[in-house]
Image (tube, rainbow, N blue to C red):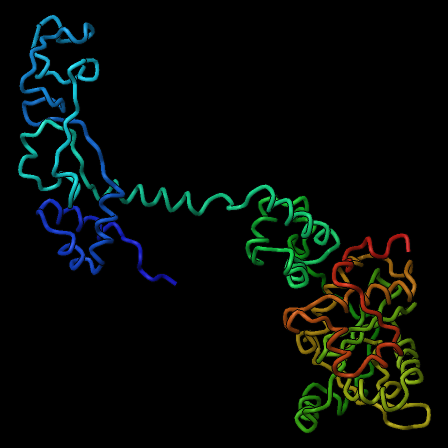
Length: 435
């Protein structure tokens, strides 16, 4: 926020004109609403020195000029040497004279420290000192520019920061995550660290940083099969809003799919909105049977109590893989275990938390990558790294820690989710190579 502490050009013009009128610093300060010490510092910081004389009197600041007896014998190169003029009328070669002693005006040792408004200005041949508003403004702008350029960082500090930040950046971690987990080793703020990295001070480059390189525009996804819309009766997004208002304490799990290549293997992702933890399951094909098989597997693994605690409400999109809501809602004995709802068509923002979390998956598995080359254990390892990654919206806690807080370690162990140490997290394709 601008606090108007710095002088502007108009105020400097006021100072210059007031000095020409022999006004005091205190009177000038009242005019520009500044303290008199501010005016004094401004004048002394921007003094302009001029070696010029008075009308018809050349510059000469020698103490002995009035009694000078030299007639052009001080400097043979003087243009006036041939005329044999008195040196007191020349003043160009005073430093070559053995009898030269510089005279200082006693008035300049006290306020206003400049010759503005001096009564003897038109007769004095000594060195002048002036305060000029335009020159002061240019000097101020130059100092301001230089103070904001460059980096106030020594080589030892840079080497220490680089040793901590660069290896973790190359592992796919963001600077925010690095600073949140290494506060005792990093002495700068997050914005400063981004500036250092952007200017190439670290061995890690911008290309090692997530989101620095913009993604290509997303292509429109085509729906290969039509879905029987009768399954959405009573399960629309409006029905979801009504159900949520009637049961505000129930958590929501958002369902989605991550494709590799068209017609190839896909991932089913289940995102728990409250703790932001996400599960991913490898599927050979993007059909509804594979989805219901995964939910049946989770039901047997967790039991009725844990399953209903985690999946009381499921929100899915309109993909063909979610066209069998009964297979998710009801177990083999006909017992209701969940409630499925659908987003509106072409409205991914209605389950935006799940969509946003897919960004972490795309860091490790870029688009158009064949998912058939991976196993479920590799996908699980990837999700362990993602779920151990701290989030600003969770107070820099990881989804793993938040899920443990809400549901306990027992369910995490049943799901086979493991925590990765903060400094060992890798969010790059190298994570799944050679594994």
